[in-house]
Each structure stands twice: as structure tokens, then as C-alpha cells.
Length: 34
Image 1 (spheres, rainbow, N blue to C red):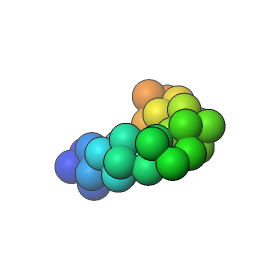
Image 2 (cartoon, rainbow, N blue to C red):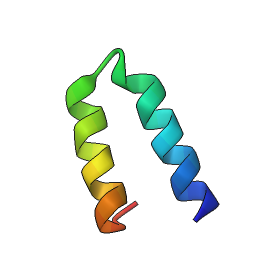
Image 3 (spheres, rainbow, N blue to C red):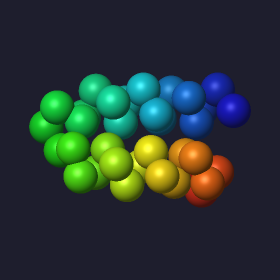
Image 4 (cartoon, one colour):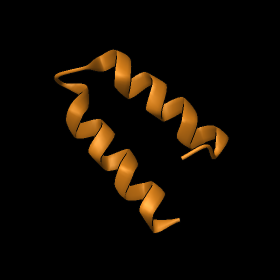
């Protein structure tokens, strides 16, 4: 669980560079795919 949170945080950090990737990763986290 903590790893997923870390990846979500990394995704948020990347969002400023790639909002589309962030949105995709967020959906994966919400579904539990990561």
C-alpha cells in the first residue's frame, strides 16, 4: 500500500510535465492496478 502511495506521489510530481500520464496513473491507482 505504501508503495502505491509513493507511486501516486511520484505521479503528482510528474503531472506538471505530463498531465495525461498523471491522469492515467491516477486511474490505475484508484483501480488498484499499480
